[in-house]
Image 1: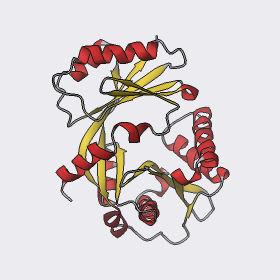
Image 2: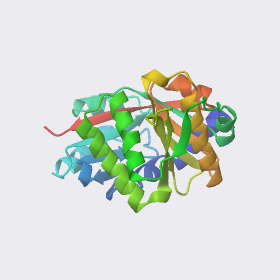
Image 3: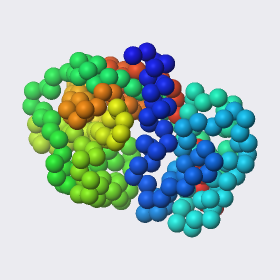
Image 4: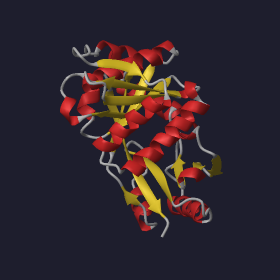
Length: 266
């Protein structure tokens, strides 16, 4: 499949409803889909397509008014895409107080390509699926340490995944690698996106002391194998510039970029 074909499939299957399937509330605002997550104090704006003729100022204003009126929400994200033909959107968002975070590259590939690029697990290391809430917490604690999150923040994030694991265990899996001492040193999640051909790769992280040994490619291949077993054909991930070459070596290819624009209540 060509990059243009992947991009068309991404737009068709992974934008709008698929991105907010876990939202507590959904509101339609013209072409926008406004998702609300009251427990996290968070909102999220997505859309499949905004016509070039649309009044961007009116759309952004409507989104801001929607979340301003909801006291449960203290911040929300407007997810922009690099290939959308909306040259003035960024300026409009900034006028309404949005702050842009670092851009990420959208990567896609076939499950076969990722499985082919797999590396063997080094001697002494073991790879496993997290099948208990304790293992999920270990994986999230690792992510918190590597990304510099506070223990409290990591614990809250772990609580969310444990709740999801207990409520909807078939919607995602966490895979991890343990070093010879039994410590979790690499982990990643795969989300199974219902009604699409894609599974999503998220939360990939490796302890700095154990990088360069193929651990991340190993758990990426394991996640690809699991996705294939469930009938998924393709994988997708949003990644930083640091992670991009790792995912390219793992069999994924870049098709566009995405930049979160974040509004915070003052």
